[in-house]
Length: 73
Image 1 (tube, rainbow, N blue to C red):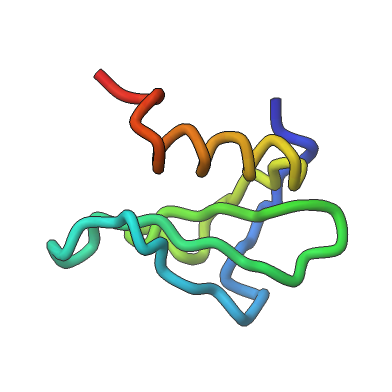
Image 2 (image 1 turned 180 degrees about the vertical axis):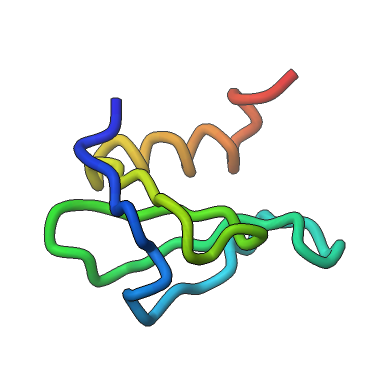
């Protein structure tokens, strides 16, 4: 569950593209590492839109599951 939503993610700087995002233009997510309450995640196709902020432990568990293949189809 998300901790909260940043309603206007574009006002914050320091976003980086996920290393697991595709190489196709516009099909990626971006994350921010320096948020005080968690990890904001935004859709690169909508950089000014809302961005959920996930608790750091939940984000770490999600990334680990993606890396080790336990999350997926």
